[in-house]
Amino acid sequence: MPGFAYAAITVVGAVAVLNLVLTLALARRLREARTGHAHDGEPVPQVLPAAGLDVSGFPHAGLASGRRTVVMLTPTCPPCQTLLDALTADAVRYRHDTLVLMVGTPEETASMAPRLTGFDTATITEALAEREFQVRGFPAVLSVVDGVVVDADHQLPVLV
Image (cartoon, rainbow, N blue to C red):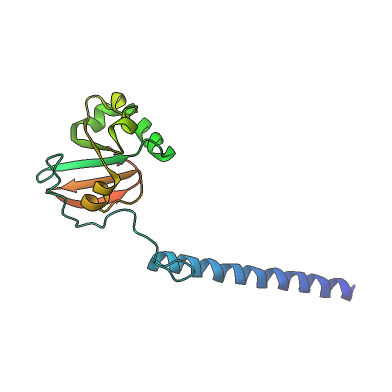
Protein backbone atom coordinates (compact mmCIF):
# COMPACT_ATOMS: atom_id res chain seq x y z
CA MET A 1 0.00 0.00 0.00
CA PRO A 2 2.77 2.55 0.68
CA GLY A 3 3.89 2.18 -2.96
CA PHE A 4 0.45 3.33 -4.10
CA ALA A 5 0.59 6.35 -1.83
CA TYR A 6 4.02 7.35 -3.15
CA ALA A 7 2.83 6.96 -6.75
CA ALA A 8 -0.30 9.05 -6.07
CA ILE A 9 1.76 11.80 -4.39
CA THR A 10 4.19 11.79 -7.33
CA VAL A 11 1.34 12.13 -9.89
CA VAL A 12 -0.35 14.91 -7.91
CA GLY A 13 2.99 16.72 -7.53
CA ALA A 14 3.71 16.44 -11.28
CA VAL A 15 0.27 17.81 -12.14
CA ALA A 16 0.75 20.68 -9.69
CA VAL A 17 4.14 21.59 -11.21
CA LEU A 18 2.70 21.42 -14.73
CA ASN A 19 -0.19 23.64 -13.65
CA LEU A 20 2.24 26.16 -12.14
CA VAL A 21 4.37 26.26 -15.31
CA LEU A 22 1.34 26.76 -17.56
CA THR A 23 -0.09 29.46 -15.27
CA LEU A 24 3.20 31.37 -15.31
CA ALA A 25 3.37 31.10 -19.11
CA LEU A 26 -0.19 32.44 -19.40
CA ALA A 27 0.61 35.32 -17.05
CA ARG A 28 3.64 36.18 -19.18
CA ARG A 29 1.57 36.21 -22.38
CA LEU A 30 -1.08 38.43 -20.78
CA ARG A 31 1.59 40.83 -19.55
CA GLU A 32 3.12 40.98 -23.06
CA ALA A 33 -0.27 41.62 -24.61
CA ARG A 34 -0.96 44.40 -22.14
CA THR A 35 2.39 46.09 -22.82
CA GLY A 36 1.95 45.80 -26.59
CA HIS A 37 4.91 43.49 -27.26
CA ALA A 38 4.89 40.06 -28.81
CA HIS A 39 6.73 37.14 -27.21
CA ASP A 40 9.75 37.80 -29.44
CA GLY A 41 10.03 41.40 -28.23
CA GLU A 42 8.65 43.03 -31.38
CA PRO A 43 5.94 45.65 -30.86
CA VAL A 44 2.39 44.50 -31.63
CA PRO A 45 1.17 46.65 -34.54
CA GLN A 46 -1.66 49.08 -33.86
CA VAL A 47 -4.47 48.42 -36.31
CA LEU A 48 -6.97 50.95 -34.92
CA PRO A 49 -6.39 54.59 -34.02
CA ALA A 50 -5.97 55.74 -30.46
CA ALA A 51 -8.62 57.94 -28.90
CA GLY A 52 -7.92 61.62 -29.51
CA LEU A 53 -7.05 61.38 -33.21
CA ASP A 54 -8.32 64.48 -35.06
CA VAL A 55 -10.17 63.49 -38.24
CA SER A 56 -12.07 66.73 -38.73
CA GLY A 57 -10.30 67.45 -42.02
CA PHE A 58 -11.48 64.26 -43.75
CA PRO A 59 -12.35 65.38 -47.30
CA HIS A 60 -15.19 62.93 -48.10
CA ALA A 61 -17.62 63.75 -45.27
CA GLY A 62 -18.28 66.33 -42.62
CA LEU A 63 -16.90 64.93 -39.39
CA ALA A 64 -15.96 68.24 -37.76
CA SER A 65 -19.12 68.63 -35.70
CA GLY A 66 -21.60 66.29 -34.11
CA ARG A 67 -21.41 62.59 -33.37
CA ARG A 68 -20.77 60.08 -36.18
CA THR A 69 -20.04 56.39 -36.37
CA VAL A 70 -17.53 55.67 -39.12
CA VAL A 71 -17.56 52.07 -40.36
CA MET A 72 -14.77 50.90 -42.67
CA LEU A 73 -15.29 47.71 -44.64
CA THR A 74 -13.37 45.89 -47.34
CA PRO A 75 -15.13 43.61 -49.81
CA THR A 76 -12.67 40.73 -49.34
CA CYS A 77 -12.61 40.26 -45.57
CA PRO A 78 -15.09 37.79 -44.03
CA PRO A 79 -15.45 39.73 -40.74
CA CYS A 80 -16.34 42.80 -42.83
CA GLN A 81 -19.13 40.85 -44.51
CA THR A 82 -20.45 39.74 -41.12
CA LEU A 83 -20.41 43.33 -39.88
CA LEU A 84 -22.10 44.49 -43.11
CA ASP A 85 -24.86 41.92 -42.50
CA ALA A 86 -25.39 43.23 -38.96
CA LEU A 87 -25.32 46.84 -40.15
CA THR A 88 -27.90 46.29 -42.89
CA ALA A 89 -30.09 44.06 -40.71
CA ASP A 90 -30.57 46.96 -38.29
CA ALA A 91 -30.24 49.75 -40.87
CA VAL A 92 -33.04 51.88 -39.48
CA ARG A 93 -31.24 52.31 -36.17
CA TYR A 94 -27.72 52.75 -37.57
CA ARG A 95 -28.48 54.81 -40.67
CA HIS A 96 -28.98 58.23 -39.08
CA ASP A 97 -25.39 58.87 -37.91
CA THR A 98 -23.28 56.25 -39.70
CA LEU A 99 -20.77 56.91 -42.45
CA VAL A 100 -19.73 53.73 -44.24
CA LEU A 101 -16.35 53.89 -45.95
CA MET A 102 -15.91 51.11 -48.46
CA VAL A 103 -12.18 50.46 -48.74
CA GLY A 104 -11.01 49.48 -52.21
CA THR A 105 -11.58 50.50 -55.79
CA PRO A 106 -15.09 51.32 -57.02
CA GLU A 107 -15.08 48.06 -58.99
CA GLU A 108 -14.13 46.03 -55.89
CA THR A 109 -16.76 47.68 -53.69
CA ALA A 110 -19.56 47.63 -56.29
CA SER A 111 -21.17 44.56 -54.71
CA MET A 112 -21.40 46.30 -51.31
CA ALA A 113 -22.92 49.57 -52.48
CA PRO A 114 -26.48 48.34 -53.21
CA ARG A 115 -26.77 46.93 -49.69
CA LEU A 116 -25.93 50.34 -48.21
CA THR A 117 -28.78 52.33 -49.73
CA GLY A 118 -29.76 55.08 -47.33
CA PHE A 119 -26.38 55.22 -45.60
CA ASP A 120 -23.82 57.95 -46.18
CA THR A 121 -21.10 56.12 -48.10
CA ALA A 122 -17.80 56.80 -49.79
CA THR A 123 -15.22 54.62 -51.48
CA ILE A 124 -11.66 55.22 -50.34
CA THR A 125 -8.29 53.55 -50.78
CA GLU A 126 -6.55 51.61 -48.06
CA ALA A 127 -3.75 54.20 -48.14
CA LEU A 128 -6.27 56.97 -47.41
CA ALA A 129 -7.78 54.95 -44.52
CA GLU A 130 -4.32 54.55 -43.05
CA ARG A 131 -3.28 58.17 -43.60
CA GLU A 132 -6.48 59.89 -42.42
CA PHE A 133 -7.70 57.45 -39.76
CA GLN A 134 -4.60 55.38 -38.89
CA VAL A 135 -6.58 52.21 -39.61
CA ARG A 136 -4.55 49.19 -40.68
CA GLY A 137 -7.04 46.42 -39.85
CA PHE A 138 -10.59 45.89 -41.03
CA PRO A 139 -13.41 46.03 -40.19
CA ALA A 140 -12.98 49.24 -38.22
CA VAL A 141 -15.71 51.08 -36.35
CA LEU A 142 -14.80 54.54 -35.06
CA SER A 143 -16.90 56.76 -32.83
CA VAL A 144 -16.17 60.35 -33.79
CA VAL A 145 -17.36 63.35 -31.75
CA ASP A 146 -16.70 66.85 -33.09
CA GLY A 147 -13.95 65.58 -35.39
CA VAL A 148 -12.09 63.56 -32.77
CA VAL A 149 -12.00 59.77 -32.48
CA VAL A 150 -13.29 58.85 -29.02
CA ASP A 151 -13.43 55.06 -29.47
CA ALA A 152 -12.32 52.45 -31.99
CA ASP A 153 -13.35 48.81 -32.26
CA HIS A 154 -13.98 46.01 -34.72
CA GLN A 155 -17.67 45.68 -33.73
CA LEU A 156 -20.69 47.90 -34.13
CA PRO A 157 -21.70 49.87 -31.04
CA VAL A 158 -24.60 48.50 -29.05
CA LEU A 159 -27.57 50.78 -29.52
CA VAL A 160 -29.94 51.34 -26.64
